[in-house]
Image (cartoon, helix red, strand yellow):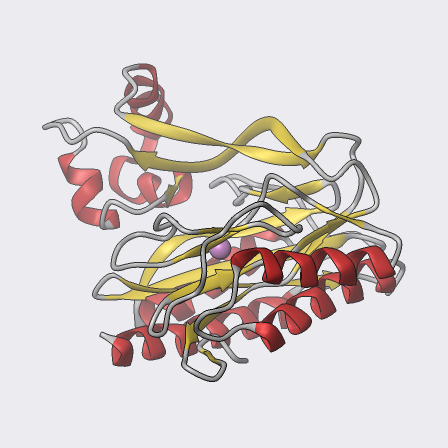
Length: 284
Ligand code: CO
């Protein structure tokens, strides 16, 4: 099982490396998503659609099949990537700041993750990780996003029960040796709380039914993109998704944006908690 987590982590890290190298002024969101997903599919399976969340959008946006968006100068671009092998998932993210206009915002998230990782080991309190993240971000004069959290990972479960807040919390939980966790500080110069915005083109089956069997089989029960359904249902995709979401068989994720439309940065790694520290599985 750890071997598969490690393999998936490595592939996820390399996929992210490829993705962030492509994020440049004038490049389309769709090109980046498709290239990264192609890379993952050659080596593993998709754990969720490549999230490409720009500026005030913190998470849960993937390009649609006819997406026309291109990156612009000054954009703060989060790329969040997930791959799995036999259900063992790697989850990792990074931020690209096109034009280097928001270097401090990006650095705050990068160092918050780095400092959090430095305190991770078996027995450490979740609240101590949050404290490390919050203090680092505060030292830059920014805020963590409080309702987006790190998480434990189990087979076929991306968010497996344990939450790791990006701030000092009351949590009394402690890390355990052998646990797989993802730490993902989100930093903003806005409010520090995300709210639902428009459609993000990301879906997940909520109920097993003869109507959702085919989708479950294709996407392993994990989140999927409208783009991927289009490969199965073609022109009927929109109607199909509308029907399934209206019947609540399929859940439609909303884009998450900062409540005051602040810019958002994010970094994330998947880690294996060890007795004396941790192993970063999604190194790139
Ligand atoms: Co994550």
